[in-house]
Image (cartoon, rainbow, N blue to C red; front, side, top):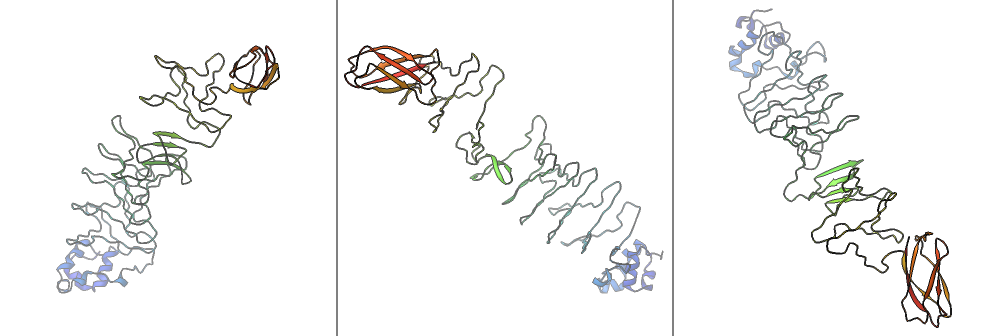
Length: 401
């Protein structure tokens, strides 16, 4: 190796000397002494490599400048006392700056100001900062202040921070009192997680923490949270906290909607409690409506000896019915003039069981009365009169099976 002296520096031209430093043929001390040469004082550009001089003669796959050391100091140290860049790396096909370490940190950035310790900028379609790890963290950030340990910002439509992992965590954030991961976006995703077989986004915390918080702002108009499939919202929590399952516009605190044969909301209790319970201070505790003529707004089914519908009240009505026909098995009809009996066919959906009780009431002034009622089948019964009607008579009936 050439001696580290100013005299040796004068023996070669500037270009050859700097390339010798790059090849490791001249000691690092001599490189620092170059700044004391008269040529360097007269022309600061004396110490700079020209654009054509940065290309290594060995080929494009080699390093432009390379040095090595086994001491504490780095092999390449750049210091900028102004607002420029200490180390700037540029490459057309590979890494601009590439750091490798088998026991410590490959690339280390430190700052005492408000500027980033390490900053990556990509004006094309590639990655500004790319981190990979076989077993450890791809990106690890630590801070003891109120600032983020890692912050990613994208002013376009791309991703601020992206972490990929084959077996571990793509991005892992931990905090004692603040947010493990905090993300904001004006138009895109604040946090986006994808996984083929694992968990896209996992929030975990200690006993006193909240795993995941979705926080809106004053004047929030969009949903606070959505569960989607193929960009279609299946479940949403709107700006007011209403939960919509099967609907993107919930009209109640809990709104379930479906076009399938299964229930929109199902409550099941395998103990002694209520499956579904509705309470109200001044309105209805539970209300059911339907537009189908063959269905019911409220349906109760008792399996075996259980009760289908049960009503109880302390001082009011246990069951209050108001409508055109109080029950489906309660109907009206007309007995024609000049008959002593009349056969009645019940509506579709009503069954007259073999032990059914059939109550008949004549509602217009009759000249006869009901003698008895005979069940004919599951759908018909016959009214026997004490005489022949002199005019048509309105009647009503009620069937209890």
